Image 1 (cartoon, helix red, strand yellow):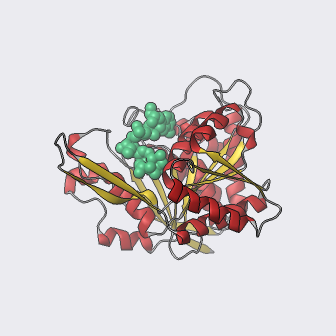
Image 2: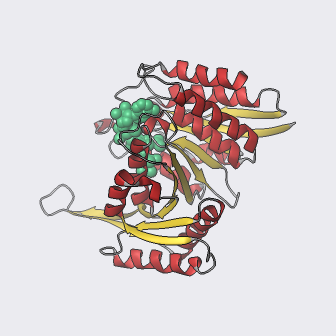
Image 3: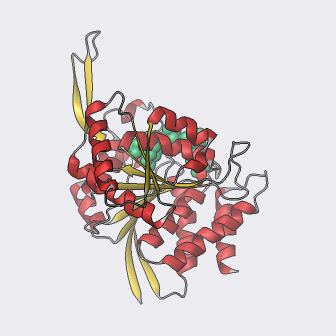
Length: 349
Ligand code: NAD
Ligand code: IPM
Ligand code: MN
């Protein structure tokens, strides 16, 4: 009997709806397996902030850090909600977790499953992983504004890139490429962002020397968006900075059947802190509370979580059940819970 301590953060909007299905699937796949998930639910997000004024207290953070892994739905209110201005649920909660728990690998796989409703007429095989740096870049909050609110305002948002931070994520990406099709694409904007871009390119070149069997190429981020649509099969492992990775992975979700299918893991590969698994999408206030959300991204995030914990067989069973469910889909939309139930039924068959 193995016990895994799991922190669950359903969050806002569709977060609780998709997490309910992900938890059903987790229970179904581990039933009778000798692995017990001991779950603690943390009520965090825009809703909690509006009620109490708290985003993520030190007590919340240390309680979460005691767990073996984290499953998160989505956090954030309606974009533009004035009551959330400066509250920064995204910064004060989600990014705080990623930074404090040193989630330097933001792992975002993209696969076009047979039957998935992709928008491309002739997509070919799509199966790549974006290794997005998770703790640096323009996300660190290094900046500020002076003469705020005036016609003379100056607002700076400095991208922070360290050799240490780049090297560790680049090494992870090369190791992943070794286990896959041995192709790695660095995506950056070295033609304009010469300082950070130059360092990314240098470190990729250096680490490439230790991986002679991995084919390395480079694309500027704007060109990468072209190829993600016109020739996505050229990609195997993409390594990129925090902001480019954010943008590319919403696009990647769209070309592989929709953002409702895109899963992710915020990984601390050293194991010093719990890793956190979450769908790529947000709280989708436009469809929240209506059972319209696709819980598949959250369910595939459970598969990534199981795999991370070394539960490979359980991870694969979840992925296979999802694959079968996607293959059997027709145009009719199903309520969130029906999709979860159908995937659970496949696991139990
Ligand atoms: P979003 O991903 O929430 O929604 C974008 C579009 O995708 C919407 O039309 C939405 O209905 C649709 N969509 C998203 N998930 C879906 C699903 N599972 N099934 C079907 N359709 C789905 O992005 P947004 O509107 O830019 O952001 C809304 C809020 O979520 C913001 O506060 C934002 O900061 C936050 N956000 C949080 C996370 C996170 O918690 N990891 C990620 C992205 C955005
Ligand atoms: C994501 C989200 C977050 C990000 C936001 C909500 C901070 O868009 O997980 O992709 O930009 O990383
Ligand atoms: Mn995003």
